[in-house]
Image (cartoon, rainbow over all chains, first blue to last red):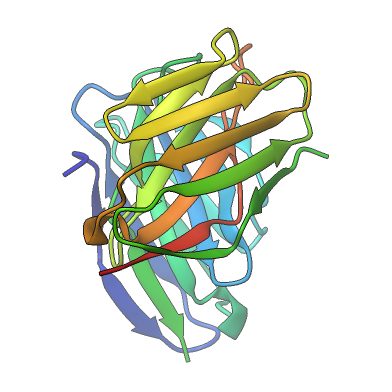
Length: 116
Length: 113
C-alpha cells in the first residue's frame, strides 16, 4: 500500500457527462500528480499541484481540470466526456514540489473510467 | 521533445532465467531514472532507481545499469519467479527543479513456471 488513496476505483458514464476523481496523498506529501494510462499511450502526465497551487501541466485537455484543496487532497474533473477518455487515471504524490534525484513519487491504485 | 523508448514490449522467460529490459532517453539533462512494477489492477510501484552519478545499482535480484554517454539504462532481474510477472515501466526525470517523469511504454514480463 503506497498510502495514496483514490476514489472511485471504477466508474462508468456516458459520453458528454462530467465526472470527478478524488485523490488523497500520502501523509505529509505536498505534491499531487495526475497521470492517465491508456492502452496505446502508456503513462501520460496530466498535471501537478504543490501545496494548493498548480505547479506544472502536461498533456491535459482543456475539458479536464484539477485542483488541490487546503487539506491537500486533489480532484480531477473530466467534462464533456468522449469514448477516448476511457482510461485508468492515477494520482501520485511526493513530499516536494520538485523531483530531486532520489525523491520519488508514489502512485495510488487508480480510477478506472469507462465512457460508453 | 522529451522521450523514453522502452524495449521489448513483451518478454517471456522461464522461471529461474534472467530478464533484461532496456530504455533509451532523449534528454541529456535527465539525471534520475526510476523503475516501476505494475501488477494487474494496481498502481505502479517503485522497485529500484538510479541517479546519474552512479553506473549500477543492485537490490537483491534486481539491478539497474546506466550508460549516460549512450543515454541507455537497463533493468536486470535474475532468478526470475512467477511473482515477477507484471508490467515494468522505466522513467526519466531532470532533477533541476522540474516536476515530472517521462515514462517508457512498458514491458509486459511473463515468467513461465
